[in-house]
Amino acid sequence: ERTRVAIIGGGPAGLLLALILHRAGIDSVVLERGSRDDVLSRMGADMLEKATTDILRTAGVGGRLDREGLVHDGFDIAWRGEVLHIPLRDLTGKTVTIYGETELTHDLYDALDEAGVPIIHGAEDVRPQDIATDAPFVTFHTVDGEHSLECDYVAGCDGFHGVCRQTIPADLLRTFERVYPFGWLGILTRTPPIQDELIYAHHARGFALCSLRSPQLSRYCLQCDAGDDVANWPDERFFDELEARLPVAVAAHLKRGPSIEKSIAPLRSFVAEPMGHGRLFLAGDAAHIVPPAGAKGLNLAVSDVHYLSRALIAHYRDKDDQLLKTYSETALARVWKAERFSWWFTSMIHMFGEEGTFSQRIQEAEFDYLAGSQAAQTALAENYVGLPY
Ligand code: APR
Image (cartoon, rainbow, N blue to C red):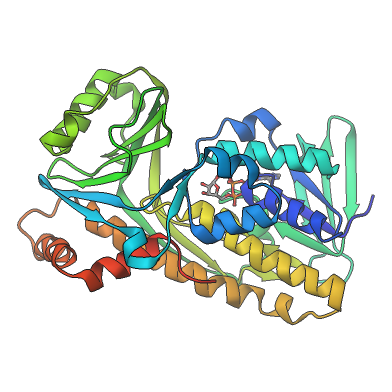
């Protein structure tokens, strides 16, 4: 078995890469450990930057996104009862689009099925081999037995817990990490959202987020203890706590409903450098993680895929390897800026249990500055809608 690009991991990064390469006439095979239902049952993110939607449209998956995606011109930050509106469009000329990651994954599967791009589900024990040589290959097994897939390049799109990052020799790989002392308890309910736009609420009881997937699907998140358990959070307790953290006028619009999903996610910032070795290139969560505030994870996966697909296309079409050589550096420059923003936003809106300390006064000054300065709001907005490529 042979292909040009062996793509390990069929999350949003791997699927989009396969589709863009196919459109450019470059064949690939996607090796995914889980079943299609496993991939489609993940929660994922819900906010797409302008550049992300442009890339998805160019790849041919903009149809349903344009029909069903909700374009948002701004969002709110609540701070101990006050609400500050951040008018993204006025400040930057750009908007963001609300569209669930699950929907996007559906669209990618549909497009890849139609194009006939092979996606092998249930690929176990996937191992990239000989990546530092000119003849890499990937071994794995499925219910049909052992396989070896020869390729020109391996794309490591296998998420944070994948195997590809570990394939880079330990003495060449540097990792950078910050783990935050709390988690996000999130639920999804089949109810109309509390308001049209997102609201990020800083409160003495902890941070709260009101987001949405569609006009009938709400997503709510609460800052919780890192070691907390969803079993401690029946829906009524969740909604009582959410109401307590929101300004009264906003809470009045809350429509409670049974949760259809409930989970706790840890918050982490993580970057691995370099994003490749030999003929292996990492993209998406395989190389970096951001905390969820500001929804940069999926958007970063898309920007990596944009840079990587462009570099592979230059290799096959123009016999030019320059972009492959600089892929890691190019991708990391954008990654680090999104890491900085996600860290900053996370640091500003959560409670760090530092009441009465220097850090807490700085946090308050941060919000006061933001509330009183259009320059500060513009800096927030340009990061939120996505920095230029
Ligand atoms: N072999 C094959 N597949 C693997 C392996 C492995 N050893 N390890 C992980 N995978 C698969 C996972 O099952 C998953 O489907 O790789 C995929 C990685 O997908 P994501 O974790 O979604 O990562 P990515 O595609 O980079 O997407 C990044 O989307 O899911 C969100 O929160 C994520 O916002 C982030 C963005």
